[in-house]
Image (tube, rainbow, N blue to C red; front, side, top):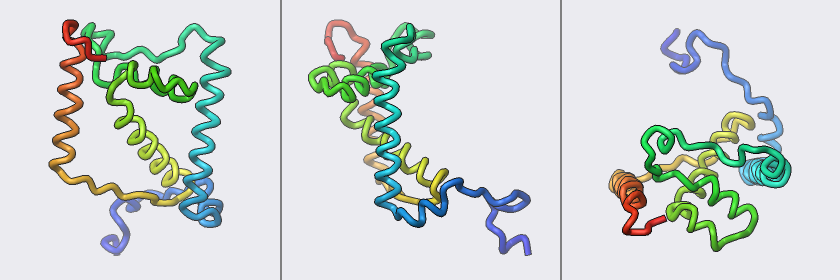
Length: 154
C-alpha cells in the first residue's frame, strides 16, 4: 500500500499551492506573464522606493568579506540594477558574466515560483554534462582572472 504513494508524500500531507486554481485557468504562458510582471514590479519597487532611502543599497558579498577577493558573482546585483535602470553600458562593467547568469537566474526563479505558487511545472531543463562542465570552468576562470589587477578584467 505504501509503495503506491510517491515517496515525497509518504507520512506527510500533500502540499497545496496557494494559487493552483488560478494557475490552471491562466495556463503556462499566463503564469509566466503574471510571475514576470510581479518580478518587474518588485524590482521597480526595490530600485525606486527602497534603494534611494536606505543606507544599504547592495547586499555585501560574504566571499569578498572573508577573503578580500571578488567572487564570480560579485557585481551581479549592480548589473541587475543598471539593467533595470536601462543603463546598458554599465551592465557589463559590473560583471562580464551577467548576460549569461541573469537570464538563468530569472528562469530558475520563475520556474520555482510557478511550481510553488501555481502548481505549474514550466520547464524541465536538461543540460548536457559537457555544457555544465564548460560553464563551471568559465565561471571559475572568470573568478580567478577578475582578481588579477594587471589584467583589468571586470
